[in-house]
Image (cartoon, rainbow, N blue to C red; front, side):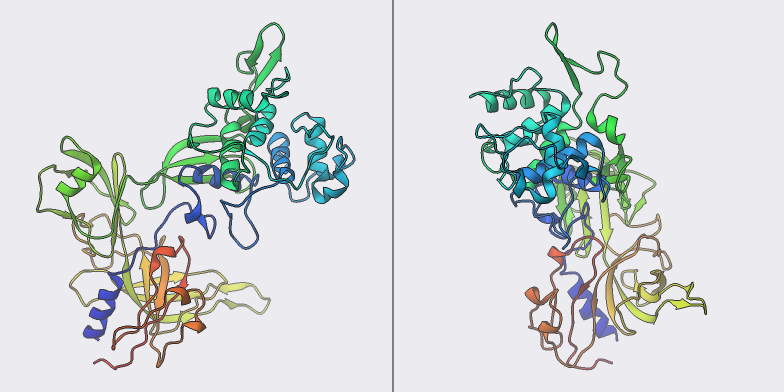
Length: 471
């Protein structure tokens, strides 16, 4: 058993950690860091959602009809599944609305509210790919601009770009982005989200555009007015710095975690961290280990070439003033039971799993951990080995992965993200989720699924084939 455990632990230490952040979509890693927050919050609000297969397709194009639909939701706050857009299906001002199908009401409303405009030939081209400039024109009109028809004529795109630039809507958009080209879905999300945070304006010939705040309006932006959109500094369950966005639709809140300045998955000296972070003096950081804020700060010493932070099996993330460390633990399944119900079909006992977690480095002793999962059965069998991230106590080591007190692993926020099962043979075709990264090499183990593609809180079916028995 000790030999088996040592070999599995060695395998575990070669894997990337599964704990990631902001993973609302299965292809979240394809979303640009600059646009990820906008995508996450608009999705949470129910304004701009992904596809039924769980993807967002950030680089995909989006049609003029689809953007008109999103602008309708932003302008009216009508994000209900059975919204009122059908009332406006006959309000069309364009000659090609017969082919607009489901989008007729959205386009009709936006056209009559002067939020969208068509082409000189009288068409709207609902299935046409929308450009960045067109998206900007729509959202800026919703904010209150174009009342003087400045977004018309040969130079309309130039005026749109100037207005957006002055308001800061384009601050996160790369200078090399061609706004005259078909816009990607993630770019559209960025432009719309930045737009709804800008002060609404009112136009008068005498004074031009005046922000509604100046004239005493209670709400200063579309986001505030229609969704009670607000933000505050926060952190996620592991201590990562974040922004918590709140609103009155959809899931009511989105916590968006900042991107770390530095990330390590193996031991690194303080000197190297200081160099990578560009530190000029010894610097103290707030420290979180496995979700627990440590009682003292951690000081990174510019010249310390001996003390090492992190280790294999530990994710270390360095932020502006915070360091977050998260361990991966190996555990063995000792008990699995499905949910139980009474005679009337009411849930009596949740689905349960018990684990022996090897949470202390150098010790063969295990910590018993019990998890429950409502009515959803755990897809594991007694004898399986699983990898998990879990909260531990406040007496963790900042310089050595796995140095935790026996009994310190907590069921709260424990996340199982992979498992290993004994089998006589390995056939990766039986496990299509990880077939793309299945390899067979070691004569004792057939290994394994690399975790770099694993989204947060997702179970991945991986297999280790033990072809020899171990005592």
